[in-house]
Image 1 (cartoon, rainbow, N blue to C red):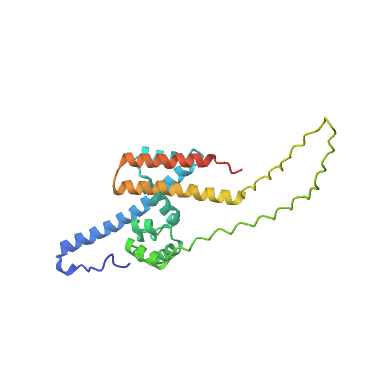
Image 2: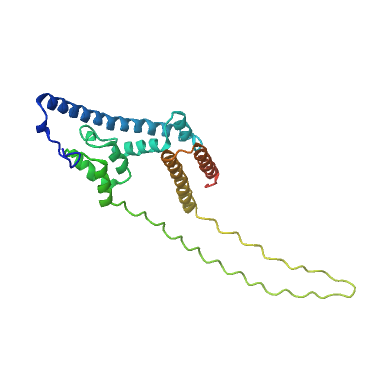
Length: 245
């Protein structure tokens, strides 16, 4: 197992009793950190199950439940993301990860694979190391949406022969009104593109909810946070009713 820092501790300066006490403390600390990583992933699994259970409710119900339990949305989503990325790891591998490293790595598949290999070999994966792995493994660029298919050319309007002017008899006549051509129906937007854009919009506002929670943790402002969350939830509710049939 690699050292936790570049600072080397001189055990030779300790007497036998001090050395014994320090070695015991190190062993207990290592066990405690391992349990901490396990508990964090356990919390992530519980929260993920709760999120799934509330999936059929209107947008924002899961966030309201989190708030009722005194859990910030940013902390909850970090645990969920870490569980989805590392939940299948077993001891002793999971004990080789710092909790912060799991949070940092959760969204980068390439860096996760490298980190797991290091952990399986007994390397302690710290948050600093996780950031270095991410810098060396940038996520793939998102695929651009395919260009829309060109609409088929409109058929040429039929050739209408000119109307014959009627013969007007003395003291009698008929009025011929011009008949306007009926407007052609507008082309409907592609169902596939609409659903894709709707999904992107929903994810954008859900990410905004998480970002609001992060801002509130850094600089609490309960009134502004509630107002911004209410706005996002209102948009998500409106978006849910937007017809995509």
